Length: 135
Image (cartoon, rainbow, N blue to C red; front, side):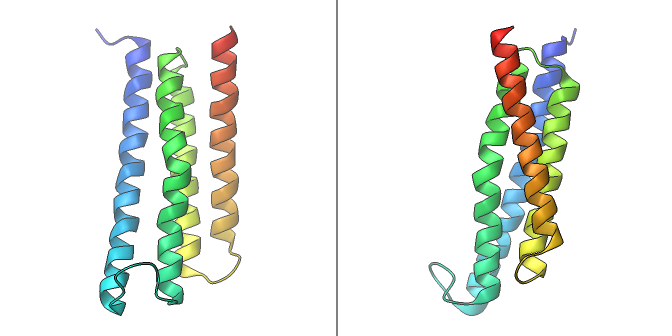
């Protein structure tokens, strides 16, 4: 029998898995760009490679605490719908941000929407963690 906590853990696993796949795709884009431009480390001053590197780096910087937060939410008894909400918002936010970095130069709507969604997801997770910790 699956318990409500298991549903929340499964939700955390689903969104963490999707975020890890996104990281692998972004990492592949960096590796491909480095091979194309024959750059062994960094971005070699090449704009599209710098953007790919930042898309991966930004995703890793925000996805990691988000994945930990989802697992902790499940562990403290948050409902699965809340974990799904945090995970989906974070995944869409990180995807939009990466696309904005990869396909547009300078400020872009994708980057803005991506950061806003990411902040909403992390703020929701933080408030949820604090609430479940003190109740």
